Length: 201
Image 1 (cartoon, helix red, strand yellow):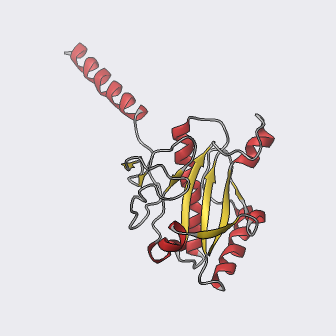
Image 2 (cartoon, helix red, strand yellow):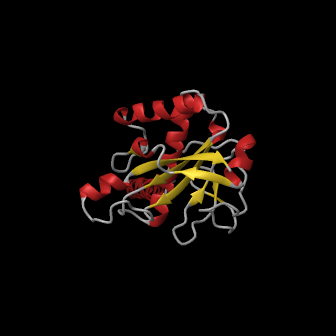
């Protein structure tokens, strides 16, 4: 009887430990009214949409071109159709992240306040937020982390009063480093969210 009890404890412990290894991450910010963009946008693969760990539908990456994730409602025509992209306007407002983190640091908040202020006076423009990571970790992991970083910026801007439908998010994982080095100085520059101003053509 004693041996049977020990065997039961062993089975339960083993089940708990092995299930813990396969637990999926939770807490990704959901995107309301997301629709698969059918691959017409730059950085989007036209492959089949599939759910990721957070229940958000996204598109598999294609040759490091990234994943487009946001629903854009009334701004969809601007963001998905012909438009101008200005990568210099918010270059100084690039948001940097700590290793393996996706929350906006206090030191980066002022940058996003400046961005939100700009959009309060420019009702026809929109924004692309590109989430990036350093080279450590798998491609799949870094695409998910880049997604969370881009969504974190989007959510922060929404909390400052910016319409989240004006913000399109894309994850590039580790496929677009600004510094090709293999050290902390390079990795620090690559853990970022870049902000691209979108204006009508």
